[in-house]
Length: 256
Ligand SMILES: [Zn+2]
Image 1 (spheres, rainbow, N blue to C red):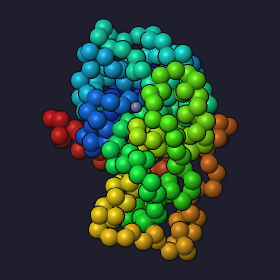
Image 2 (cartoon, rainbow, N blue to C red):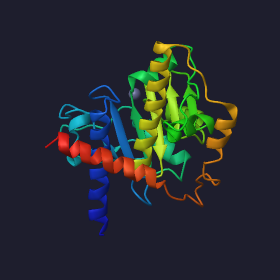
Image 3 (cartoon, rainbow, N blue to C red):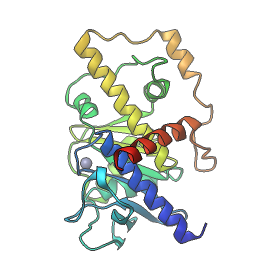
Image 4 (tube, helix red, strand yellow):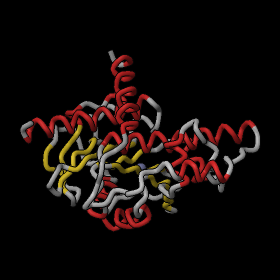
């Protein structure tokens, strides 16, 4: 595939992730952005904001713009602008060379757990081991501030709070999820949402009971032994791509 064809493909995947997030109601209609690193360059492709945007659910590849690591617009159609929180993305790419996608969205059910002093509990067993895995393998971080991440120093502060985790819950604001590709970052965000949704609904029904300690150990043991590193990034699991395929087809059906 030529470089131009590869970039077009990446733009399509970023736009599709935005539409899936819109379809699943994982953010307010217009607030949120998905990005991916342009391989080998200090540049990213990111969903634009601005007067011509149509919201996450209707994102097209044309609305995915090119931005450098300082948050400067390099190319994009008129009426589109760099999201003011672009620094969530750029500073994460600087801090984590093994990461190729960053998603920032505002999923209401997850945000509720940052507003109330209520912890997410390990209540999901075989119902959704991947969502449980986020919790029991310390893949969720917290960022205590609620402000807009509008400059690189705040971006660095957030990246520090995220550390080596895969999803970060940002108080009274939203989440940031990362992945080795757009598909993995999307599925991480969906799993965090599922974990929060089930915790929330369990609390409406009664007093949620965490699964047994020996079962937690069982699921902890299922995790691949070597976490991704810049030298050895490995590949996302097959489950990531089967879920992606499902949502991709569902989206195509709904948007016919
Ligand atoms: Zn935000």
